[in-house]
Amino acid sequence: MRKAAVILAPGTLTLIEDAGRIGYAHLGVPRAGAFDPRSWRLANRLVGNPEASAALENLGGGLALEALRHLTIAVTGAAGTVFVDGRAHTTNTVIHVRRGARITLGPARAGIRYYVAVGGGIDAEPVLGSRSHDTLGGLGPAPLRTSDVLYTGSSPRTDPVIDHAPVPDDTATFAMMPGPDATEHLLEQLLSRPWDLDPQSNRIGVRLSGSPIEAAQHTLASRPMVQGAVQLPPNGLPIILGPDHPTTGGYPVVAVVTARSMSQVAQWSGGPRHFGRA
Amino acid sequence: MRVTPFGEDGWLVAADDPIALAAAIDATDLADVVPGADCVLLRGNPQVVARVIADLPEELATPVLTSVVTLQVTWDGPDLAEVARTAGMSNTALVEVMRNTTFKVAFCGFSPGFGYMTGLPRPLHVPRRARPRSSVPAGSVAIAAGYCAVYPTESPGGWHLLGTSTTALFDPCCDPPALLGPGTIVRFA
Picture 1 (cartoon, each protein chain N blue to C red):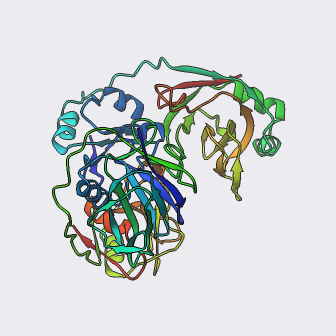
Picture 2 (picture 1 turned 90 degrees about the horizontal axis):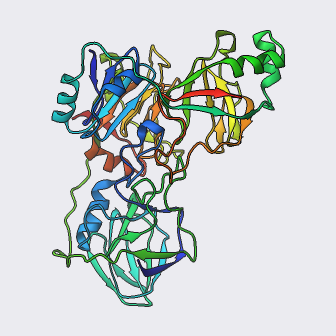
Picture 3 (picture 1 turned 45 degrees about the vertical axis):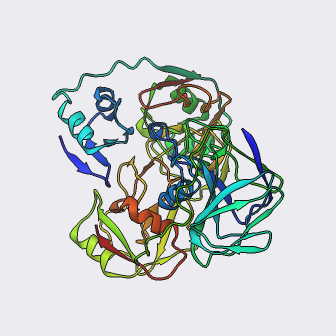
């Protein structure tokens, strides 16, 4: 473990995330892990890390840190400006930072979750095989606070092979497949109307606002859940389960958002969206 | 055997006894095998899941449950008297019923190490509280909706609190990390 940076300000919320805890769902342990895996993997690839390395997940910007040695970093996910000692850099690019430099994430202009990868990968004590913070169970490294020191792994890494990555334009449609409780009537209602983002949303669940869905069945026997499941609580407003969702639940599941589209869900900052068939 | 796809890498297998089904599954090459109240979720590569399902025996053997946990409980829960009144019994009788019941963890959920236990006698099947508490202390022994559970950590909760146990229920450094996993037999003293 090598000291890499000190946190000057964590912003609204900055978490350490990797691929998550797999294989403990039967004990009630959420998977957690990066909410937008596509951006998280890209950040690691840009700095030459193994794709599964831990990185920072920052909500909306405002993260400020000071490099304690020379660092290679990349910021992906949300679109915004990365300032290094006041000089503006773009996201999705490799940035070399000298010792003592101050790195700041500007406000997210599009999307809401930035991923910051540091060459060597963020190191922290793994819990049940993962360095991810789980906001439901509180497992894994704690949310970052001012004065926290970040460490990176000392494992050798390959040099970056690209210095800038094109990212696909997100469409306004969340691709889904029918869920275990889907009926034509429920799917028709989910697919035909626009949905907006309820500000109460978080990593446990993304809540939708809009015209409620009429459902016949309100609760079922508790059953295991998966990330992306579109649950229908009694108020008829769907909830898309995020990475920290409880492992079982009793509301009907009308659809499951594809893993690829979950990256879009993770970056949704509001505005009307539709569901479409995968 | 009824199998329902659940997302891109999940399948729900319906089961009368999810613990017996989960015990019959070779989990080696699967990401997760998760029991629920009336089914088991299998997650993994589609070909592997298909093979695992094809290999399941027609008749499931009744699993021998070897994990038995006895929890010392102080019966001081704030909802004990109200539950006893609803069930038409004295506080002492309610505690006796809880002490004489053998519970079984059917599945976990809600939070790490939170086991939903079956076995609760009928008179104690009460709905969740109308107003959930914003904070329930760790170790609270609670009942609701036909289940009994012990809160592993402090969390919000809507169940009726009957008592308190000081036994640690979830420790990520232990293997397994949860004391009360699916299939564990639980008694209260």
